[in-house]
Image (tube, rainbow, N blue to C red; front, side):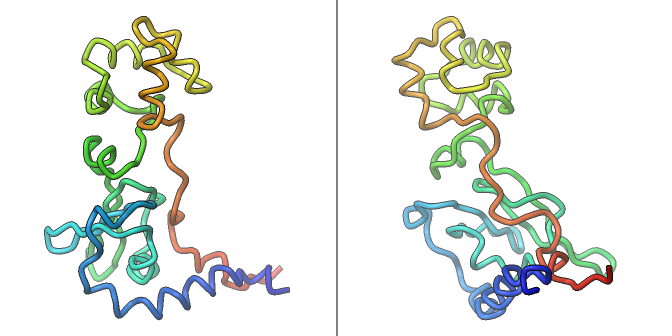
Length: 179
């Protein structure tokens, strides 16, 4: 019975309600964020947080249209009395500096150039050789052997990072519905 009503979403809402008082405080510095860094932009100032815990109250009030993942900035937007959140990716260099790998199947040539060891020509060949089913498939790119691939592996992934917060409100799942 409890599972039908989204007890997990309700528990998340309670944790968010308890943490709402901390939303106005600045988040930790980037050196303290070793986990899943997410930014929050308010009044033109971007603050870095470790995960979405401190943003949960904002995200409950203003559900995002896209999932919140590591390496993004969330901005609350009020339009016509309605509130929603806009999710924008951080520039590639900032994502890499925060330990968020780039998607080898989705990054542009300019984004891949931010990875140390990938110049413009090699980044273009990586883009041209898509799609990749696993990181070892990068070795089929001319100039990218096993040693270089091993050096690039911490900075590249296949697919985007897992979502830290779903699109929309998790409370939608906890609303009882008639059969």
